[in-house]
View 1 (tube, rainbow, N blue to C red):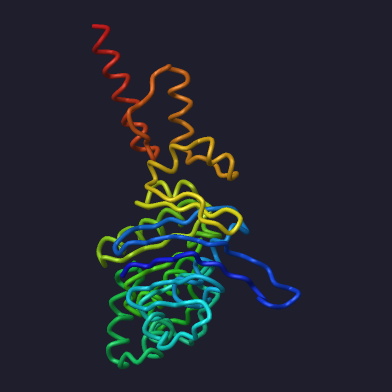
View 2: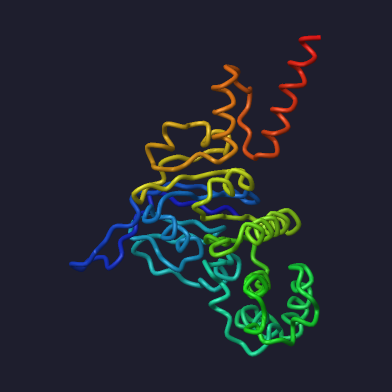
Length: 291
């Protein structure tokens, strides 16, 4: 399910003395099956774009197309329930949205609210608990008796139980330690592949955008200013500095290595693992050349 924003502008409290323009003529296309990262500083418009992706917000100007549904400024949309069931959003600290007395009921709540029969919702809950690496006995526990990491997985299961085509992740690793962050991001990468999802990651982390995404868009002052592959975007050192964004750690290290050795690699390495392999290969070739 493609998602397209065309000349989308949005103002909070539009038409009042408190009006604040958050988006300015944003153009962005997210193809079906892609892993799209949206990066930018706080206040850049990332979260406002996110809320247009399943019609939480409607554009003040322009159009948002979600699959076959077109949301046009000034036109009251109809039948949004189908859109919201197909686009699942994992908000920051999703565990704060847990409220049912058992994990099973919490996971079942969303799909049942959208008309899924109780038995099917229960089947999904049991399947997802296993998929997310939680013990089967978790289902009958109170979500508030779980660890923070387990609570987050339960909240994610509640979104996945809707069986969405598109999964939107709003800073999904906020508040997690490095190990928890890696586990959650690897989980989303696996779900992206296994469930054939379109995944949209809204993040401050250049490392996560570089490692997991196949497309990157930069938001700045309410505009989408850059769009391309991670290789294309993170190769533009000066442009990123202009938007006050850091390079991924692997790219920083690659640039330092190239400066010290005076030799440039033919490609940009977006993870520290692939960079380490390239450096090892470089020294092996040099060693063989001196024999």
